[in-house]
Length: 216
Length: 247
Ligand SMILES: [Zn+2]
Image (cartoon, rainbow over all chains, first blue to last red):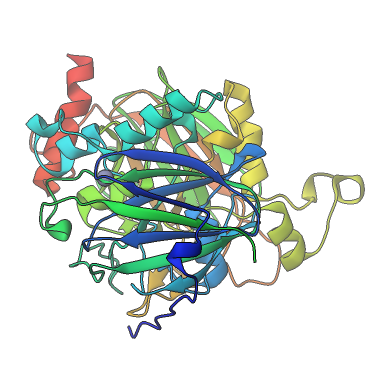
């Protein structure tokens, strides 16, 4: 697949918000309609597990199924509209210097690590633990029930024509980014993945930078 | 002939129960550990969008991504299992005459069904009115205190959607013929919630969801030499995680 990379003209110096999130930490914030949200892969091949909710109705949330069906393709990239479980556009990817992002692979958890790697991996830090801690601190009635299929920005999870799901080497690198414009007020929930069992990130989870620009 | 033999006709004596679900309807029920459910496509071209919940703790539920990752697959057929988000095997696909069941496309919604098939309300059409997958699942989920927050990616039995090298999704018509079936053996006590609405990518321009037949019997849980258990080391660990609940 040839990736069409789309760069952004936005100046990081002009961002209204900028924060570095270390590996293994959650992040939760409302991005307002019209604002542009950038995730920057600072050191390369870091998976950023991300969920979106309508900030005014948490029961409306990002839907992997609706998104890939609407565009007829399983990979997310510039031009992809991220749709909700009600089929509404939540965000539009407007720039992407990585080229492909996964939305089928889901988030790691203590329990799935026992299945995928070894029974004694249960006590290692995981994305779903990060999500749950963030939801508890958010304290607005959201629980594990609200954890649905997420996006894994910068991850490469190809499906073959024979129906195999594979974890391929990352196609991201230090300094690559993905940028999206909010089409509604969205609550963003991120786990910057702490996964230590997967060669995708060379067993080395790294920090990412999050930037928000106000509507132009 | 025993019903537990692969591909066999069903023995009415061995059946625990049987129920027909018409096309476009929704259904739920509890399948206990050691029960096998056969879903039969009665007319060909059926679609059965299905969710699974741990009957005792409904926050534990079928997880598409964990199912796919553990088994390095994007679809279900004989030999694969359905995982919960808690690292447990909920049910195993012990037999399948169809070969491919979609896991990545989810369900239709009201807007999509109206755009595709036109509006057909209950007022004019009585029980022939047009239903959609999302609302059908919400209907059934509400009976257990569940709702929109619990509509997760479904397993879509009998439907086949492939993905080409560029990631494009292609619906494959004719995947399931009249009489095709899939068998699910339940490894834990499971609430099954399903809808027989048409697959969201079904190119058929007509609204014509197909009927299915549900047939259940006591099969016992997976043995030590079970095909699904031994398909991969991941599944052996998944069965272990389930079985410690019942020791
Ligand atoms: Zn993770």
